[in-house]
Image (cartoon, rainbow, N blue to C red; front, side, top):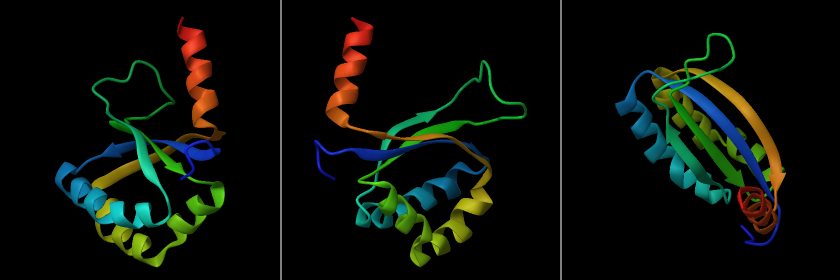
Length: 118
């Protein structure tokens, strides 16, 4: 990924029901994700939800960062990824919620956040 170019980011919430299988999924999919220039950004284990949409029981929230939207699409369509998802993700995760997606320029976002918090 170009450090100064725009990146495509997705924000995802999961309800993980089997931590061990989910950990195996993450280990198996990581090299496939990297092959498409993708990476995890923020990765959180959620202890308590204060407010959320209806029956949301997300206990994991993270961002996936790609060089562009096209790379995101190719990653999720990859047959190797789809096999890993079927074998490990589906039995380990009850619910997936796409919380958002956007394009960001890392330098501009950092500067914007820094100004807002000062």
